[in-house]
Amino acid sequence: MFQASTVEGKFLTVAAGNSFRCIEISRRTFIIESQKFLTISEGLLVEKINREIELRESYAEIFVDAFREEILNLTGEAAEMKLDFYENRPLKVDGIAIVIGLTGSPSGRAVVYMSDETLKIFARKMLRQDEFSEDEANDAAEDAANVFVARGAKLLNELAKKNLTLTPPGTICGSAIKIAAHKLITFKITAALSFGEICMNIGFAEGD
Image (tube, rainbow, N blue to C red; front, side, top):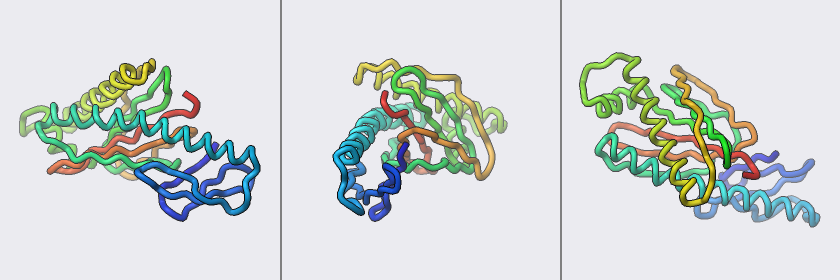
């Protein structure tokens, strides 16, 4: 297991006590120098890590396209999209988070989340009505999250010849929510809209 960061100057611990300095280049993490000379086995491990991250990023980019298309369909607004590598740490959410498991190949999980303020406006656009209950707003967000992730999974299966399926969504509401991402390579997709941000944290297991 490894941990990585796209913040320049931080270190990636790969083997017992060995760290490698990372830098972000075109959104991808590359290892550019080490604290000591690498053995052949360590060098091969570094190359494997980079390949794993790049492959998973190509998967995440497919979800970016799907996310963009479905937000436009649901809200009538074109979102400004951003994709970032998300270092292996718990995801912190204030508001609502919808968790959807990814099974098959590649396995993993997706979390669609937004603030309470963004949820109110998003639900109004989705439901096309001004008056609705909190439960109705939460249900609208859950339905939308399922659409976002299902569309991404469909595109990934078609383009990358994968066999990705989804588990039923689970919704969590509150403040200071923490969602773990054990043994996943994760990315944050941000959709910036006029009324706020809707985000997707998507993680894929290694080796799929």
